[in-house]
Length: 360
Image 1 (tube, helix red, strand yellow):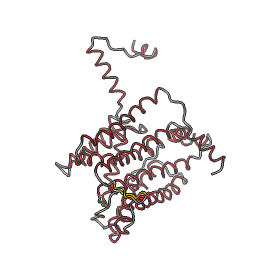
Image 2 (tube, one colour):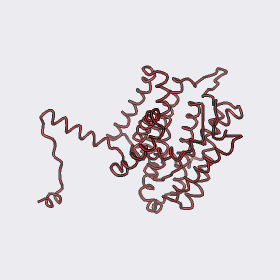
Image 3 (cartoon, one colour):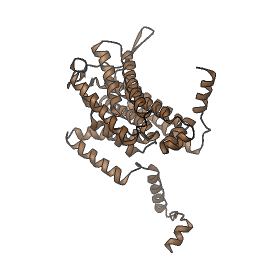
Image 4 (cartoon, helix red, strand yellow):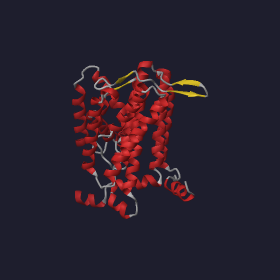
């Protein structure tokens, strides 16, 4: 890398000084780190594994929020990269008997290759909005059919069983990370690291460029930004994070099936980001974990009930929460309720002069 390129990277990703708006994200991230350290001390193996699987879906939601929430690129087949990561890891470790670290590399590289090819031919050709979403859904369906039909490699409808957990060899010593507690720390560490990295990127100059592209791509292009290149980079980065989630899912569960390419799961990913709020980083992660735990609870009673609940949540989100849940509004309500309980008069909202004259 030349000195000029290094200077450009430092300029793009340089961080502004911390301000009052940065206190809340830092406190929430610190609280999440403390929770990750304390949960294994109080939770049993079954509960720990259940929440761990939900955290994997949180990583998937984070990857989609980077693409849709920050860059404004809507896709209906984002789980294609989740499946590529999972199947790449499973095929390399089970079918070819390679080390888990090799499986991780192959799974991520498969997602990168597919995302780079699709993104290059679509984004540089000006394909946007619903056209891009429809093509991504077609790619997802093709991937699902390949997973079902290519039985000699993917195992067909049954999938691939007996996938080994994550394990590494350091200086001749084997490090087994397949246990419930060890895999919990691995998944949580990946989620926290990805959350912190995306937060840093979004508050840098590059994050402001992505925000400009998502707001109005034509104006951003008129300002000199190479918008197709930036969108391609974000598309590939989100595919990498989704593939990492797929690798962790396969390694933790020990099985991967064609259901990972299901359009229903792709719909859930969109709902997670929509409910959590586009571009809020932590919101989609919390929504993904909560709804995944809810799905597991509902599926234990009825296998047909979850699609109905999912559809109802989608309608409610579109009609009543188009911008997702706003915790700030809940805080205002709680503050007013506290004032009423203590006997203080609530703070009256300030109206503009024009609105006051209209009311008179």
